[in-house]
Length: 81
Figure 1 (spheres, one colour):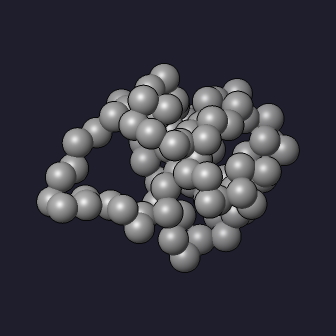
Figure 2 (cartoon, helix red, strand yellow):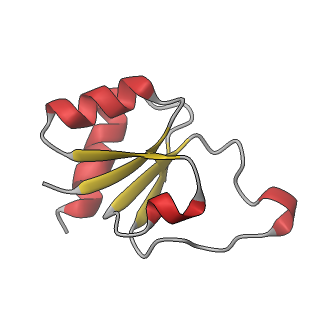
Figure 3 (cartoon, helix red, strand yellow):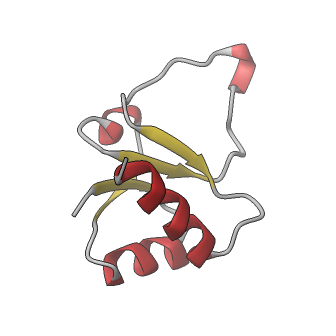
């Protein structure tokens, strides 16, 4: 399965992805995103101070307003392309 980076506050998303067999890595700093097929973020810090550097070549999914199941579906649609 895929290696997915998930922000630490999204514990329900982390558990749901692990139950589906994905390897989950907590995103604490920029280097944690390296090697991930996809990253899930809360969106609270998006484009902070106008900077939008990317740390991963994989897809980034903003989880705000989505349930854990909806995030899982979005992750699987991105990594199964």
